Length: 245
Image 1 (tube, one colour):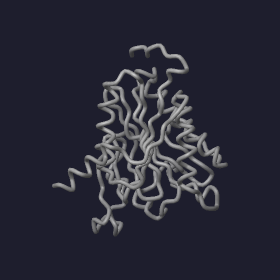
Image 2: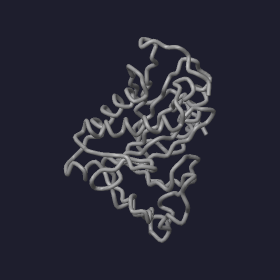
Image 3: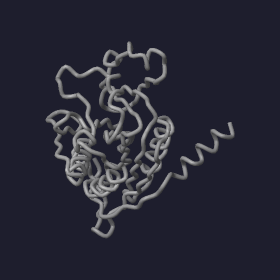
Image 4: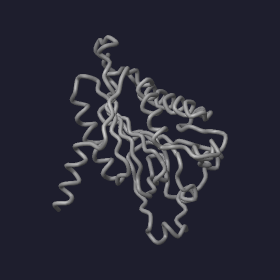
């Protein structure tokens, strides 16, 4: 792996953070792939961070199997919820409103990160975010995700293209937990899903989670500042083209 260019503290790149609200899974994926291509051609180490929520969908990662999905469930049997393959690590995941999708687009070589180091930093950022919210959490040896006293709070599934990351993590803030029955529990017994509302036994504001997360991930990725934006220009162009069609 090539060594990163010399940088002083003042040259640390900003984390460009885009708050996308609720968007379609495919639209978010298209945006991630375009940003990964763009960032891979830059020489300034810029990191993009996309934060959004998705409509109801089940995705199957490279470590997943259709056998993990409760196809007998009426929502799936009647095709009310789509099941999609996704080129990311991890297994089957349920996505829905109330779950925060976290997509860091990070040029690994520029920052001198291996994939393992990136995953370690992503876990650290998530755990420190929850600590800021007075929620004690931890990772499990050999497994990707974050757990609290009530179950798994965040799932992690990452993809890497030309040494630039996309996909990332899914943090359950206040989703309808019944939907997670669409995916069968792992026999190891560590995949019972939970959420921050259950951990706190009370309401948790998505805005507070996002604010803490942006700050903690910026630190975890070794950057000293971030910029916040609402929406993304590329996303508006994609939406405009779809409307014209």
